[in-house]
Image 1 (cartoon, rainbow, N blue to C red):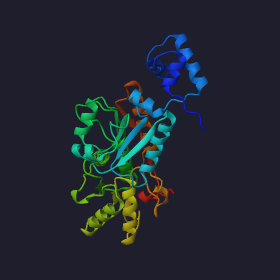
Image 2: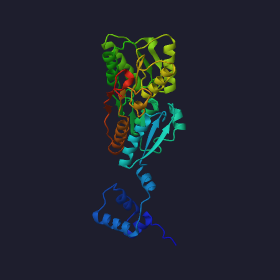
Image 3: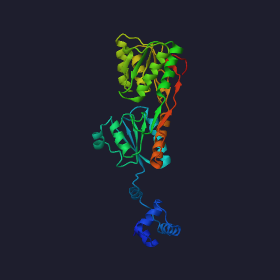
Image 4: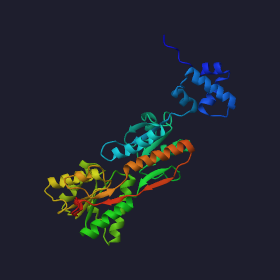
Length: 339
């Protein structure tokens, strides 16, 4: 017959101490006399006792699990982001729960989201996957949160990790204007209320203003960071009779859709119209025309945000704002001869 596994009650009885004393020794939660602690640990070894992790988690009110809220997990952008988060979780002994859904209102969050304060020690919140009201409620309750690709809501001090979107875009547009003589630059915006898209547009406008140019309202479309939507937006601009020198698609997935659509329509990229993106995802070098873009360190963003959340959970502190640098990556879609 299999030997019955010892319990914490057996340890307490054998060591001649209370159950609470055994718990204090195993969890190192309160000071225990050296001789008592030694006796408890010797009994643990002798009886080959293995604490039940779930029970220890319950006692400490910790789950050793972190939640991640995403609006979607489609597209090449999310793979390195998730790899960075997963690497940090593995290094620190946490499990990861992922919930993907469009932006939720507070009542929908409580009813629909299986990830939150009831079963995780903290949350990573990507862009608009959680409304400000719910972020505020969780933050005021002291629940650890770190925001990815967005700033903290006004009046709150929630740690966040973002890219240098504006500076990176300025470098990109400066290159189009100064190296390739582009004057009419179309812009395909990301999803409404998306901070990345907002700051990229600000970078575009800043570069245009610096060079004495303006952003033509007829050259603005909604790409929503999705290839098919961006392709349709570019087609609509061209069918209206507008002729941009270049199209800044806002992200690489949109750029892939736009390049494919332009080639289908008979336009030459970059001879007729240059196309540039943002992110430098894994497909950027392998598009029909290799893509000039801005490299944003997505894996580093995931790792950094997860690391900040682990620090917040364990120490109660984290950096309020982390801004990760971006860099210009030159390929052929802007008109350069680079591969």
